[in-house]
Image 1 (spheres, one colour):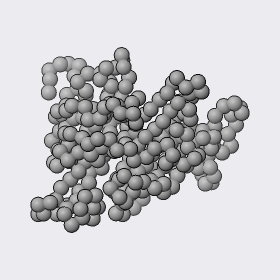
Image 2 (cartoon, rainbow, N blue to C red):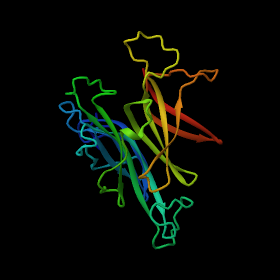
Image 3 (cartoon, rainbow, N blue to C red):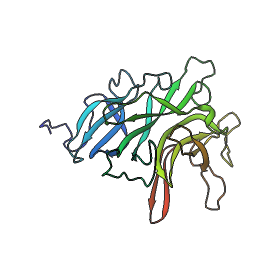
Image 4 (cartoon, rainbow, N blue to C red):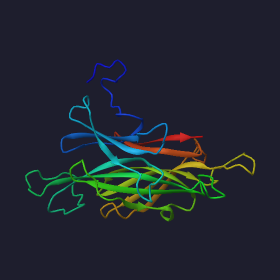
Length: 266
């Protein structure tokens, strides 16, 4: 807490610079962790990092060192949004053993591993045909792990350009990962190329449309298979664009039903 009139008293805020999307909100070893899009040198530099803070009561927050920095070839232009999944395992399951999703606390080998997934943004604005969509842009889905919630492993690229369906542009982002039915599932926001049904734009304008890519993994999060593509439809079930890009996909399960939310662009 602080007596500074302009400082939020109950809201998480960064020590300096700019913050945006909350990422990877989770409880890990009885401590709440909040990660967020963070640009410490804003407005002089807009490069995005993952800020990190912890709390025991969701009211008082302690700022920790930056969790993810865009310091690799796969994320040199920004560590974009993503999510966290807490793996709970015991000796019988072995590492990445999903089991029933609950560790046996009486087992000495019971433990948890925090896995963070995010999009690494790579841009090449020097390309003569760069449009930031198909040319001059690359998107990588990246995983880092932590066993203490403070230090993080080297980066592991789990999805790259040739892993996305051919209908997609290179603008794919914001992995949401969770465990379901003994496997991991990932949602990705995407921009499909000239896929909108009934597009009435001139021939020289793009008719892209938003979509969500659904991937599955059964081997420790490192190998993913495309499960399906969710696209916009109208009341008659016919293909219809709902914006040119979908970002930040999220799935909520209520009363046996699944509800998908996205942030629509365009």
